[in-house]
Image (cartoon, rainbow, N blue to C red):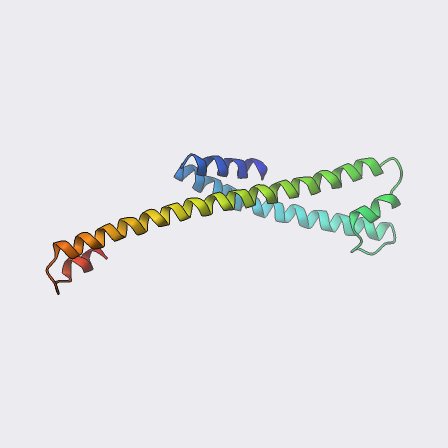
Length: 138
């Protein structure tokens, strides 16, 4: 997901319309994969909690001390890495959202300016009361 978000960010910065759209599609497609992986992780954690005689809602950090000593560092590292990646994905997605909003705002300003110019030209080019050209341009 990080790679896809990075690709999206680069595409938008480079004003690469088709590339940006491909990045959007890839991110949406990958979202399904992430949703399924989260479900599998929740089920595995719930199973681990049951095996340890604990509530399924107990956070991973509270389950780790109950595991055998030899696996604690590995599980703790996996939990920490997963958390760090989630934070990084969230931050990058928010940066991309800000970048896209800025891009959309600039385009909206351009369109508004362009439309104002057309409206001024139409007023000057058409006789008062003649709306046929204005309607054709709308």
